[in-house]
Length: 166
Image (cartoon, rainbow, N blue to C red; front, side, top):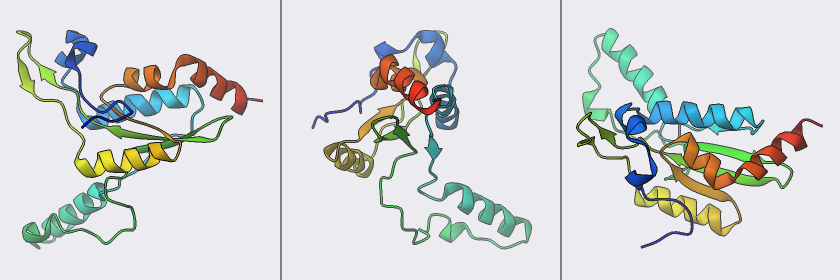
């Protein structure tokens, strides 16, 4: 299936140097947030799966001598829908929502052989993005801040900065 937004990793779009950096999803997200902040876009990281909270809970339990391994992947019953994006924002002056699913790019070695494949969106994530796209939001899966900059466009980024700095 195809989608009306960027959703598939295309390795040729990235420099070998970028892929050799072997950056993880958290680093990609930090770089995207930094880019959006540079243009005064109100990016908000969302921990939809509750990974950080579960991680802190698991660490605290382990240090207290409690073994929680059998429930490590239990869902918390939160109200965030399945597939919710990693980053949300609003683009001024239009007020259009932006939903970005962040993934780690492929990793390559100095011999240019793939060490690790690029992260891929789940079907739930693609369905969520499509539902937001159908409602008029800007949506994409991003493996770099450049993906976001190219998708939103320099004109829209500059217009956002101008609109919020009145």
